[in-house]
Amino acid sequence: MEEMIAHYEDTKRNTFFIQLINLKQKCSTVEHIEDIQKLNTRVTDILEEHRIDFVIGSFKDKIHHEVLLWELDLLEKAFRVARKFERKIMEKRNSTTHNYKYGSVATPSLPQPTRLTPQQLEKKKEQKGFISFVISNTLKVISFLRRNYFT
Image (cartoon, rainbow, N blue to C red):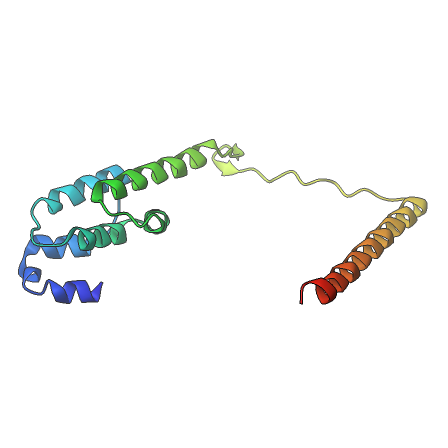
């Protein structure tokens, strides 16, 4: 980013350029994109790839990372991905259920502990012992296969 700013040192005096490189998303993605587009039409002499880098860097962290993963070559594609990802975030947020009671969060209902009889406890121990036995033997087989076939 610093290299790009240095590259456009002459343009840096331009107020719109300064606004573009300092722009950070503080509203919805749609509103932020509108702000970007207003500045974008006024800033000239910047390569598209650098413009995209400035714009992607201005999005909120979750959206920024998602858009960055796409390695986009057009500003409109970056806008499309950002809008789509924000929609997904909002859908997840709206689909979660909340247990509110009169404006405060209700305490979650936790499962009640069950008391085991001595026979049930012994049976559980036996099951755990069997599982440990199976896991131990499986690890031995994997170790043998690695030594003999994968080295």
